[in-house]
Length: 424
Ligand code: PMP
Picture 1 (cartoon, rainbow, N blue to C red):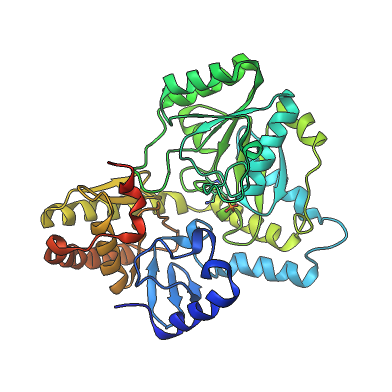
Picture 2 (picture 1 turned 30 degrees about the horizontal axis):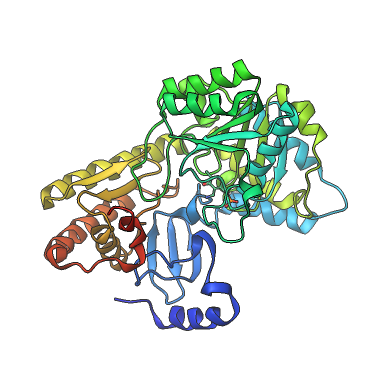
């Protein structure tokens, strides 16, 4: 095993000109050593690394790939608009059409602001909530990711106290801790942030408890604060609406990104009428926020969301995968936890505090052409087929067997030592 030669050469060159060799969520620094860092192409549900190896890709670009890489209709809409005009002196009519399309699909939404990344949308949600309430405090779940701006980045380097001021944390799904956080915010509560479900890294995922979601709504209403649901990662993989509409809770603001244009750069803050005046009062913008080509791609993506059975198909594929993996893990004698929605699974092994089993299993899958992640939730896409899932299950059967042969002698995962360091 081990990464191929072009990948290794690129990593060496990157070390010289890219800080740390690679940054952010696409750095393979915390993945098994044989995971490739650089890729050459994507098509449908598959990905090719720079050494020509092909993978069935269960990461889907960490979310953006919803309908398949290089989707013909979506990319044709993008290219057509690119030839016509993309970043211009003003927006095109597509911006209004796209806002109409999204507010037509997402129940709570009456308006839209377009931006580029999820972090733009979540940071703007906080600003709008503060403008609306004239208050400071954001109450948000411990361990939940909302982006990489100083107020929310998971790494402390370069962040100062005031960047993190006026934030109080609660435990996801824990009504008591949510109430305590809100009580602590007192009359300074601007908003409560919630992910659609608990999708933190390194730990089991959890569906939202409807009682917790309803209580978040009530607390915001009692206090005149805004409820924000961060759909950046889960958007359109659970629902064609804001995912909390499935449990009867409507937020005031929701944030979207990743797959809204199937990988083309656009993200969105959606809001209800209640927050419209505040949204109109804040100054938010960016040179590329009005780009027309991603809007054309988004309109085509949303058309597919509305008009196809992609969600039902993806869900059925996810259930087929889950069921098949559960059978194979049990047959091999492993406690193997699959958590979260079927379209966004996470795999963790029992008795695996530093993830050495997870690393071994993932490497064995990779070697068999299936790209899985040992500690971050994965993503299905609508380009996957039953045959792809069955191929993944065949690979898993062999990977579990390979793991079983090695399980007694797996080395510690040094790069994840921080997971167990606090345990003593
Ligand atoms: N919120 C959530 C829930 C996310 O998963 C992400 C990205 N992983 C973000 C916000 C930030 O999005 P982006 O990386 O596009 O800034």
